[in-house]
Length: 176
Image (cartoon, rainbow, N blue to C red; front, side, top):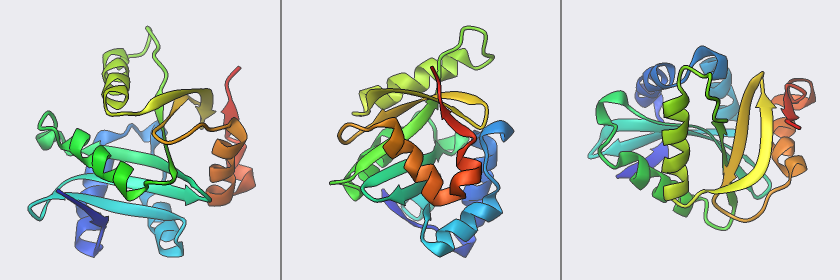
């Protein structure tokens, strides 16, 4: 398995995976992410197996914090250990930095409650840890997990301020 910066042809394929894997309420405009990648603020990564795209990872880096903003394996490839292997490669790629990610908070009234529980179990099984930070990200309640070191809300929020600016970062707030 290989993870690398997506080239032009791969960008179209990872965009399809992105649109299939994430609900509209959680998606950023793909055009904006491509622009941020060109500016060096984001990475749009292809997850490949033998040259075939099996998934995507989108990361945001600020200081020693790397936010795994989006991570998905193609629907056709799920359940084949690609996710665990890719997460392991990402942890090595960002060794020495604090890799963090957000997952939806469990909610017994949510339509996708089982997915939320399964997703958290997956990340915990693969070495991510709870930070105790719960946030509202563009009106979606999330919790922050980490694979490397402790994290404060201020450090987490600084990633957004640096990447999308203070105005939009105001749409990311601490849940009390």
